[in-house]
Length: 180
Length: 167
Image (cartoon, rainbow over all chains, first blue to last red; front, side, top):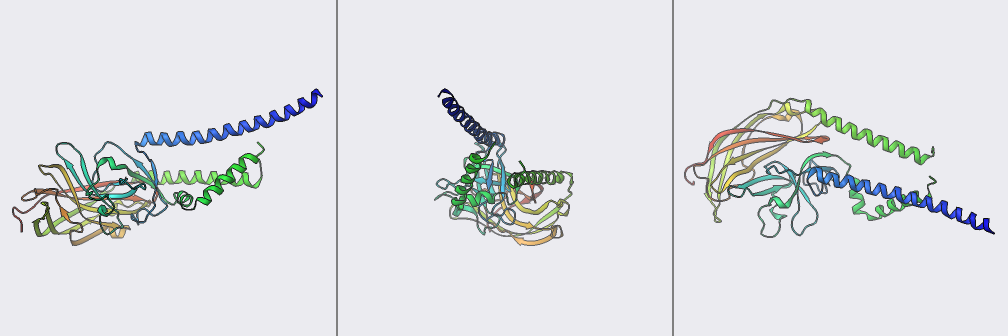
């Protein structure tokens, strides 16, 4: 009777160990991704070091689905720079070009007006009610580089959440059923 | 270890890595280019110069802009975004930059040009300090690559000034 109990125990322990190993590997993957993301945030000085272009307002330079690399330094904001900014009350950041800069003599603070290359008029229509300019604290970063097409994955996953669930489900299934 | 999925996974990872390395090299090759651009801007006419009801000065002017920016194009260049900005200082602001006109140059052939135009965007000051003021006209360009790092530079042309009185 003793060896039945032993066999049952050893079978249970193998599965337990395998499960734990898989859980640890999964945890390692997730934490390394997080470390890379947070590290990028530190290096670029921006809350969001990579953004996906969502609209066609900067065509033909940036098309929907491109990704932009952002960097935020203490350098003053100057006309022509492509900046990513948030409007109070809107959650989606906007990527447009600075067309007007007014920098105060005394405080060094800036008032900035932006416009999308492909738009007819400036962004005052997008700003909050009564807001004529952006200030530095609205701006999340400057675009310094870009990769075409790579952002489509994110756009598809955001606009059709079904695909996100299918992907995660399939990944989960793969992890559970893999024999090593 | 040799099933279809493992092979597909290996292939995909490898090709993505190679693509990323190629994009990085393409971007680095842009540093080998030494450009020699030139530009000239003439203010043909100050069309009008008024103070708006809100108290800000506004001016409308017509310019002749000619430039040769062909040396900025490399094989990794998608387009050139250029704009002309007026830069000046006022008692209130240490720097003002107002974009007057911009254009997108999609190919090297179009990079040598001459254009006679009035300001595309309204030239409105923050205040009413423009009378008699000197300003610079700067031609900025932004090189947008097919992949990788974007470059920007400018040519500053000095010696322009607003009229002493509104007209």
